[in-house]
Length: 187
Image (cartoon, rainbow, N blue to C red; front, side, top):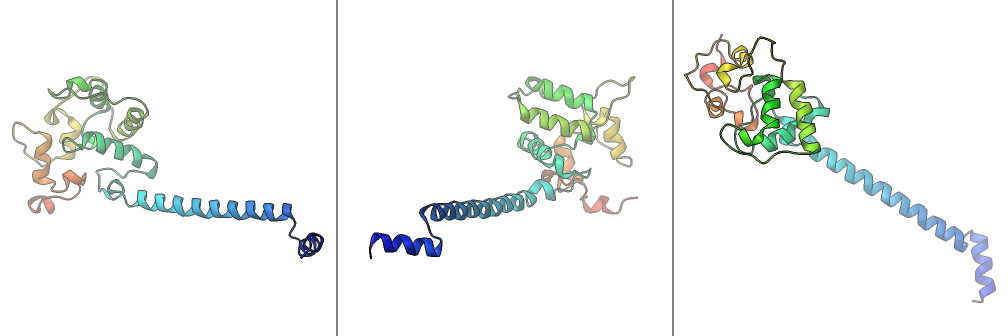
């Protein structure tokens, strides 16, 4: 086939070099678009199935705070049972985050940067303010919020984070709604 005849056929079918190049770019664009949608859907699905979104925490956690809750659980729940922010007032949490080297007789590596700010936003929203006349509590029995969350419970003299699991069997999964059988139907 001659060169001239091939060009005539390409013009007739609208397949010029520029048209073919343009079509290739269009096909590439659609492939990238489809791939992006599939990847984004996969990520969204995976995030929706994370343990944090299924956690039955004390408070409902809106979607915009779920990443913050996840960071909190990763940082605090990796060493001990993560305590719901509602248990202590905001001022207690502020002291704990600002002074990690004095974390209940343990020196922790400071959390810095955006991770700290994201966690702090979550804790601020889900903890409560301290009254002016109150001292900042650092122990459960010193927190009026802890006592308010447990109105009918007679606690031993010392309550620590591991005590939670005796009445809240799902505490390690941040599920404080599930109670042990003896408390399930308590008045």
